[in-house]
Amino acid sequence: MLNRAAQPLVRLVDRYLPDPYIFVLILTLVAFVAAMAVEGQSPVAVMVMWGDGFWGLLTFSMQMLLVLITGFMLASTPLVKGILNRLASIARTPGQAILLVTYVALIASWINWGFGLVVGALFAKALARQIKVHYPLLIASAYSGFVVWHGGLAGSIPLTIATPGHFTEQTIGIIGTGDTIFAFFNIAIVLALFVVVPVVNRLMLPEEKDSFFVDEARIRDPEVPEITITRPAEHLENSRVLAWLIGFSGIAYAFYYFVQEGGGLNLNIVNFMFLFLAIVLHQTPRRLLISLNEAVKGGAGIVIQFPFYAGIMAVMTDSGLAQTISSGFVSIASAETLPFWSFISAGVVNIFVPSGGGQWAVQAPVMLPAAQELGANIPRVAMAVAWGDAWTNLLQPFWALPVLAIAGLKAKDIMGYCLMLLIITGVIISLGLTFL
Image (cartoon, rainbow, N blue to C red):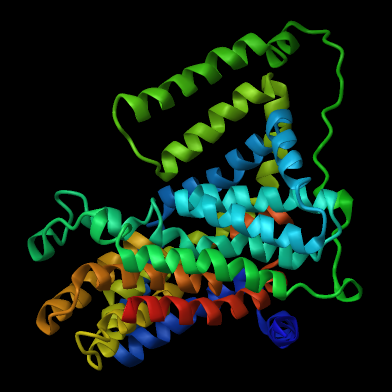
């Protein structure tokens, strides 16, 4: 039944969803028009906001590019390829492959969102090399695990409000993760999604005659040609000693970071670990560089699109449009329904401001005073914004770019299935935030 219900959505998305680059251009124009029409901003003022903010995500853009590159390099090492292939061999049927990749993506994303994006996509490719399975749904399943990230260990909003000195501390104080990430309502939502998302993905699997099987040549790992060393420089390029001295130095720092400094997972340390593990496991600089050359081919979308999203975020925040959207939903809320409307408003804002930390900076000044005035549960409202941010990532191609680059697909190939998941998970999260 779900497969039949999903097919119209798949056809709709395939027909009308443009390339993510076109999507971000359209969003830019929509933000421009809305800022002028709703907030009364002049065209010149909007243009200045956009231009001033255009390069605001340069650090984050590089981090996301490195998520793709370092994850690809690590996954292409003989050891990791072997592990992924052995894990993929557990699945014997297409249905089992869909379930397995969804569970792996959910677990990895709950631990850390960057880790989940890369691991899910790379594991999906390992499965596709062993099992004939509908490839777009397999990749959509790998991406679907991302929906739980903001309710997990690396959720930026709950970690922000648990950190002394955060920008809303004078309003709400310090709220520990026991009231957010590890609160009953949040754990219940996560567990429900761990049950429902894999089942939905499995039920959307089409029959073999309607399936698209990826050409093995598209997902085959690059071969490392044998060479004859004739120059002194080639000894360095193929030196295990050089690679291991640098690689193990990086691993030693990561160990120190976790054990001595008590650091937690974040995007920088994930990229750091991926890079230096790849240096060690590739064994020689030359093998690493061959893998690097393959990895960078998929990064074009990140490089060109993220600056446009930075410009959109600047227009949304500086013009007051994001606050207006949030205030509109808050105005119809009560103490009991404020988490629900916070969730919905966060989902809408996330289409234009696809950044958890950035979104909290925009919505907290609206949501927190409303929660205090209405007597609503503040940790629940904060988590509602967090879940809204994660929820519409199923529709927003911003975060799917690394996954699509690794998989070699376009956004329209997977977003039909993600749209079905958006509807179902939206109901589950709404119920959990409102009634648990």
